[in-house]
Image 1 (cartoon, rainbow, N blue to C red):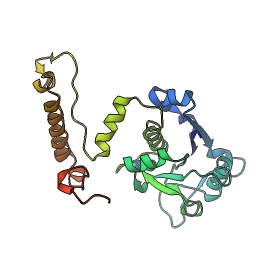
Image 2: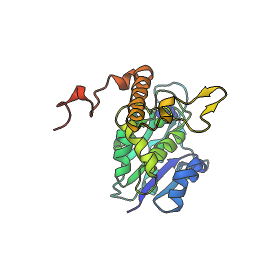
Image 3: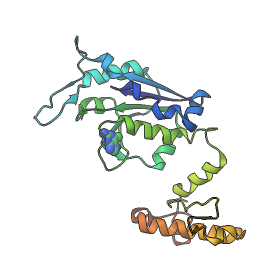
Image 4: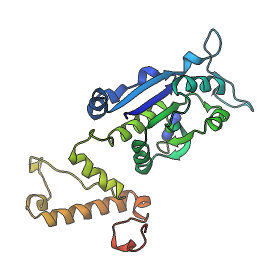
Length: 241
Ligand code: 6GU
């Protein structure tokens, strides 16, 4: 079965957007995944197709109505659809490569993009949505976050990516940042490529890359560096049975 994505949004014209290009776009044309955008506005209330209202308890901004959002979901998702329903919100759990792998391995996703101050919490609970954030900063809506999540999932689908990128994936999955990359010319604006990369000593190249990856991770991402990493001698016997 094809991996299927449905996106509920007030801005359906933002999809597929960048996902029509490059790797994801080719995979979309090849039928390795599908994308459907559902316009939440089509399920709005009254002649003006109202989708939002002022927050109970007061405060700034507008909140998307639960009845409107629920109708949009009902229109986009048949009864018994096995796909997880994900609400993209800065209140959600952080998206990481483990969640990306889990979602890519399943039947697809249904993504709800909020605008304004957010979505009425009752429809989030009633539909048992998973709340997901892509990072600790605030976007103007969930659409760009949905594009990020889809890009990360689609590149893992069978047949989408080449062998080179597959190998690269393993570095980050192992909890390390990538080593730096170099290509021709061997000298550029007085800057030489690290000589070990021109030496032809494969074991030394591998050791140098490992050291570079570890140094970058230690300096830039102490949160990753201080996390238990499997496949290192330090944690021998501490991994899953
Ligand atoms: Cl999922 N939505 C919005 N609006 N802002 C975000 C986000 C999501 N993730 C990080 N910032």
